[in-house]
Image 1: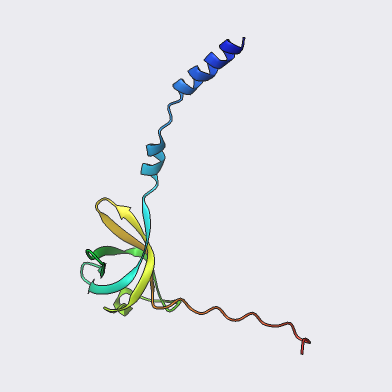
Image 2 (image 1 turned 90 degrees about the horizontal axis):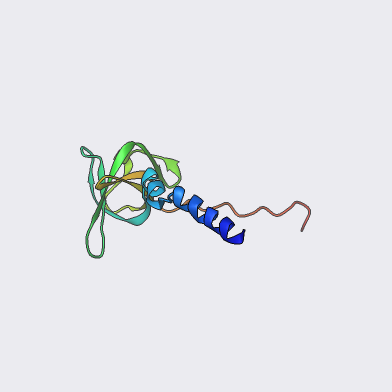
Length: 118
């Protein structure tokens, strides 16, 4: 009976093929990035970050969320030399920017001390 139970388990596993690449292809590859902007093309809507070995170019879409120092911004507000970070998603052979954060992260407000503790 044990052999029969094991055999049924193997048959069921063989009947349901596992395809880990199916899930990966359904979900687009994403990549965090950080660097300094060396080129901006407003017509093509691209930003290029300088790299040690080669520069990387990212496409800015209408869905891209851009922030400068924590405030909502536009691509026109981004300048060459700005330090940026964000998240990009693969779309074919190009990387599209999901979020683009320009400048330093806003400092968190210090925790307030409870009143009456003098």
